[in-house]
Image 1 (cartoon, helix red, strand yellow):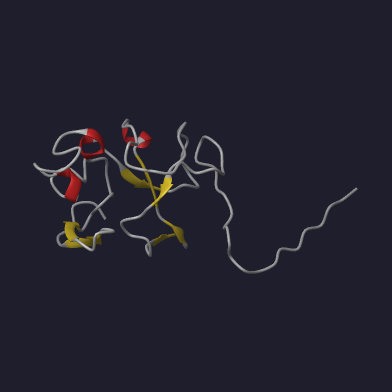
Image 2 (cartoon, rainbow, N blue to C red):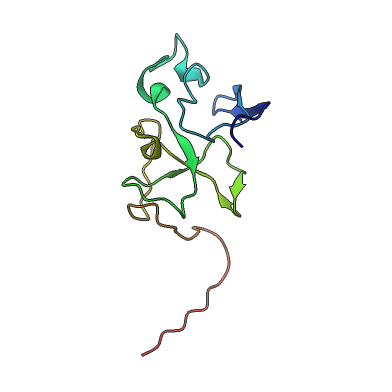
Amino acid sequence: FDSVDGDTPVTFANRTTVAYPADLGARCDAWDDRRHPDCREVGDPGMGAGFCAQKWCYVDACNCDIPVLPKMAVYVPDARYRGKSVFYSYATCGGEDSFAKVVPEVGSHGCRCIGFDNIPGTIDIKVKG
């Protein structure tokens, strides 16, 4: 969905809603610069600094090979790609993630797929041997 018209409303913890482009995350770009409340002139880290200046994009966490695990998207928490949650990555775009406060504790390097946590249900396992 690269270069489509419209906007994607993103609501932050302080209940501020900001209009990002409709193709948010479709390609490597510094999406937050001048949009995120902390990425404006009076923000911290401010325009062109810190995570604001870093390029990122949404990735297929089941089909990538990068040394840093992608993180689950917080801007579009209900969005799905091939039935799974959407993930973002700075590493895919050559950037450094200084936005995420928490680093995933599960998974491994190379964007390996992982299961769901805290989801009710059962799994049948058969072990030979």
